[in-house]
Image 1 (tube, rainbow, N blue to C red):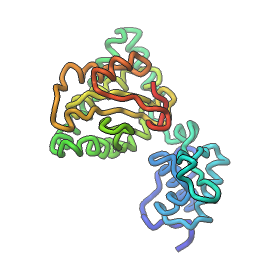
Image 2 (cartoon, rainbow, N blue to C red):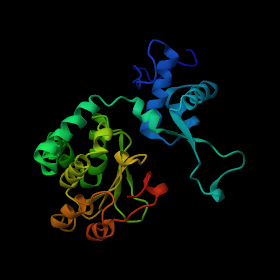
Image 3 (spheres, one colour):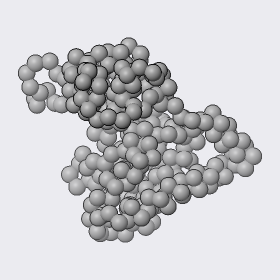
Length: 280
């Protein structure tokens, strides 16, 4: 097996900026995709995931850095916990790298929503967003509700990943602070940047699916590295009313009065490093 052949098999998913037709380019596209989905990530972790030698993964990372697809981030490990020697480099996708994974029909969708807003008003855009997310919610509901309460956030993340959102679930940084749902990719990020109603409808759907208050802390559409949603622990522990307070938290738009929403939902805002993005 050549050093650029992977042990996992399967065709690489190529972003628009990575040409096809060469095995090395296909592998590089796979590396870029893994950084998009799991970054920031170290070279050693990437090498293990795709079955490449250290020399091969470094070559691909150098090429992606030169193309502006990825960037080096500072390690988040506290100095007191680092071992001797040079600290490991962490690689993350850039805005250019994320844009290279083409968002089909973005321009057409944006133009259509602008027309809808101009002719029928912002409320029509919000209603459109809710109808669009209704199909996703309908498909996810049986899967999420069949999962044990403590696994529902992870189950939702897996369902979202199946639709291209590259999602993951993790415990919130604070003890007893619930969980966080992180989406490393948003298929409609360019459209949502102009029409936040899409993000708001999605957040409302998450609250209904999980049966607990949620609060959006960061979004790719607003320039953050990932979309981060805090999920209250109350219903996951089998207690508490999740009705009106959940709706208030789900409606809390990025940049709004997050203090009140967080208090009513029992959520805790995180810092940039803790949430993976900038708190809004």
